[in-house]
Length: 120
Image (cartoon, rainbow, N blue to C red):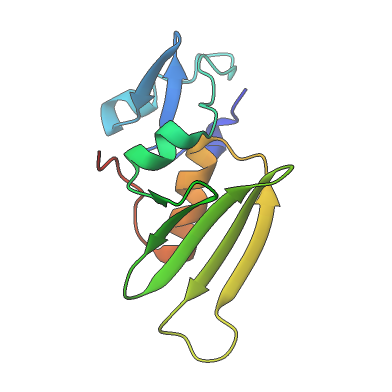
C-alpha cells in the first residue's frame, strides 16, 4: 500500500495490475472516500531503470550528465551513489533501501531537481 502523501504528479503506480502515470485529473480519484489506497506500488527492476534512461554495465545502472552522477546497484538492497559535479566540498549521498518506482522518482527529484521520465 502507498500512503497518498507519498505520491506526486508524474509518479508511476499500478492500478488493477497495470502501470499508470498520475496526472492532475486522476490525482483525487486515486484515493477513495475512506482514505484507503486503491492502487499498488511498482517494484523497482531493470526494465524500469532502462525505460527511465539509465545506462547499464551489468552491475550498476547510471545516469551521468554534466551536473551529477546518479548510480544504483543491487546488493542485498538497492544502493544509491549520488554525486553532484557542480558542488564544492561534499556533494555526495549514499543510501540503500527497497525503493518502489514512485519512491525512486521522488528521490531522484529531491536530489537532482529533475523529473525522472520514461525515455525508452
